[in-house]
Image (tube, rainbow over all chains, first blue to last red; front, side):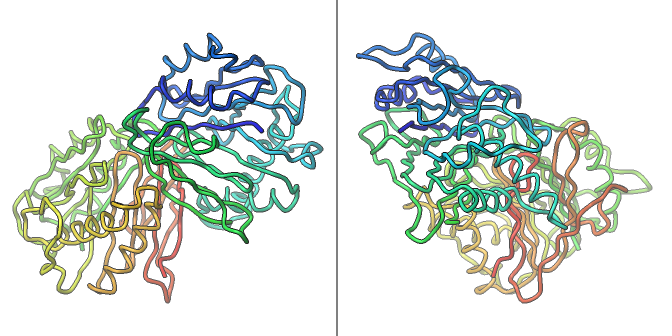
Length: 247
Length: 247
């Protein structure tokens, strides 16, 4: 199963300690890696079909990028293929422009039903995996919610309603990170997120990962959906969990 | 009645277009003014006990600050005689540091008895105006909810704090509470006017208590619903992240 990592902070931050730890602890994911971040509100993604970590060695690019990338949000993904071919294009994160903003998305899970989805508005040119389709579905859904609403609709409500519809229309396992550079949405319906704030050993800010028990021997807190809910949705801004809802 | 203004943007932005109009439309409030903003995550405040509008002119310093202050979040307050004394220190915004952030606070309203509130935390705001006590009350509540559960939702904790405050100190509240990344807005007796500006106008979101808004554009009116305790908005960057009733 793929794994996810995010760093969220109030100012631009690098993750030279936690990103390599993430790659090593999620080393069973051999089918590619990617790091997404923002520079002056524009999204950038560096990704590869190579292994991020193999037999005690980090991918050279991954290691260098971990030291250099500086952003309020850093999203990383290591891939174990379940849908789509193994190539750079199908490595996560993905980026799309939507509503005049750049959005970054990374996913783990399995949702074969959504592979047939055809977006009306946004299109990831080369990717055809369930993850790519999930990203397109979410942006289409947010746009539709916006259009349906007669008054001001909050972005959190739009993401919550769209995700709820996603799980109904295309049942599957979804764990995703979605950000437009101001807010990071984290959703899970099948695994736990591990969170750490104010780390003494790693970077400051809020760290989030799907890697079991977190990345360091500190007090990581696990969050997961409640039994009867469709999944847990978080909105993270700076180093705070701002909103949290079981959908 | 005093008036308040807030701008939230994805990048540092100047409210040169709207702050002078805000001052002009608040010209009946003659007891001073204040502008709060963030630089490198530190809150800075400029305030004055002089009239913001006199002899058909917006106060010169206010005008200059409106042109110069650039920040992701800007809040402003124009005081009426109800809001307290005539000294600069009595004017809003107020600032306090807690929960790893520096916060800015501006408030409009009338509350019984809250001037007797004794804060349980340091520092105390050393002016005897009830808005300072409102801010201290909210600070104390948020700390009590989040000190030992740092991964709790900040938004949910604020809702609980507001409910406690209204129960203990019934009254009229309309306030903006902001840290470097997020702006909270609450009202239980007046409407807020909201405008989402397009990218070419700074990709920002503007809120004000001025009932007709600050331009001819399509401002959205947000009022507390009947049989609720009030309306809460959460804004991150240019996005309205949450809009809900406090019940």
